[in-house]
Amino acid sequence: MSSHGLADKRILITGAARGLGRSIADAAAAQGARLVLSDIREEELAATADCLRQKGASVESLVIDQASPLSIESGMSQIAEGGGLDGLVNNAALATNVGGKSMMEYDIDLWDRVMAINVRGPWLMTRAAVPLMAGANYGKVVNVASDTALWGAPQLMAYVASKGAVISMSRAMARELGEHNICVNVIAPGLTHCEATEYVPETRYAHYADGRALKREQQPQDIDGTVLYLLSDWSNFVSGQVIPINGGFVFN
Image 1 (cartoon, rainbow, N blue to C red):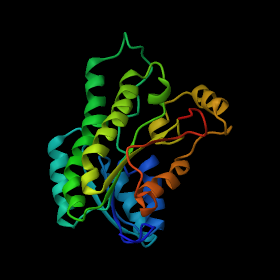
Image 2: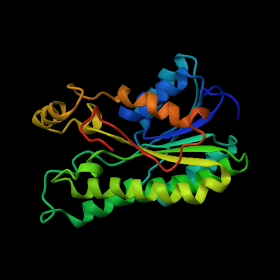
Image 3: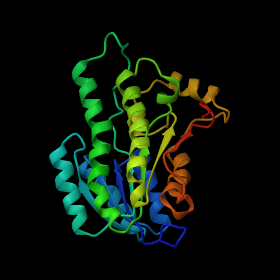
Image 4: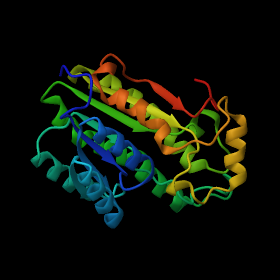
């Protein structure tokens, strides 16, 4: 791989139907990437794929339920039929309506579902993607965590724990996959205005904006540049790192 951009690189983005995933997909498409988009929201995924194709992007789309190992296995088998992968963005996660209760009140079934989607899902997606990268001795994995895992947001126990696990898991992945020249890194966005966070009270948005070094609310597009960097050859010697993208709410 000699190009520093994303031209002709095949990138899989999960949770791509809306929010952060859609924004990343749009930015990667603008850089010439060949996209494979997955999500559980079939209609929204189709609409996102069609929108990008109308802009001239090369886009495949596939419905994958990240809570289901069988769905992941089947989906990744179909992706493999199209060739190798240069990059994977593990963005899909359960973030809607997972907070609001203390650790003493938290529901065990919800805890288990959050862990299945937010932790087991990225592990299984990455495990299935590695053979599609290792053959070329090249690959980039970007796992999406959250700055809540860096400062310990209250009344959000399962989500915070899951994103902390993503960070730790990614470091272990980086160690294990380095021999295949696969880089694994993590971004930790702050509270972002998008569909997944529509349930968050406006007072929480204001709390974040006031606590940031950059005094404004965060938008999905704020993370795009960092993700593109981590997917590109500019970051070929960067692995196992966590990059907060939160306007300076948390310093790493």
